[in-house]
Amino acid sequence: MKNIPRIFVGSEITVGATIAASRDVSHYLTRVMRRNDCLVFGDGNEYAATLSADGRFLLVGDKTSHVDPSNDITLMFAPIKRTDDLLNMATQMGVGRFLPVITDRTNTNHVNWERMKKIVIEAAEQSNRNSVPTILPPCRFSELDLSGLVFADERAAHGAETSPMPGVVRSVLIGPEGGFSDAEFAALDSAGACGISLGKTILRAEVAAVVAMAKVLK
Image (cartoon, rainbow, N blue to C red; front, side, top):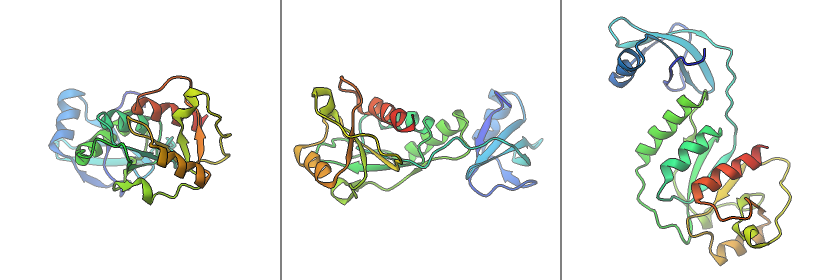
């Protein structure tokens, strides 16, 4: 089913269901892709579907055998100027949910989260996922449970020792553009959080997120 358009329609999908098609979806299928068949997905499942003759509805057919490649990892990150790029790329990596974290050096506080939701939906559609990651409400660094947490430790680029990767990883934390503060590093170390090296260079935050996920999923 390669190259068939994929449309996210939410979580409640059943064989034989009729789902209202937005004007954007109808235009995309008929005017851009010039076809009326597609795949619809949500909540880990994928179904074949067709657009009705009047372009108003998606008619759900059989469930496909495609297995959702998404994972159950939470990516915690400090909002940055390129938050859209970070979310796009990490969604393609299969991240299950995102948790924005306000750190001491976070300098991007005004993010259009509704736009970010649209970005992760588009990335999920493109990357062959059957689910869309959840964007959780922002929280402060001080509110995090740091025990057992894996974080990108930029100190490793300056020769600092890092910890072995734990066998099971549930959450990964990426710092802001200016890095973690001394107080935050102290809190991470004190809690026994696992700092991992992303190499010998200092990476942009959005790139660090992808590299960290690649190491965790290795």
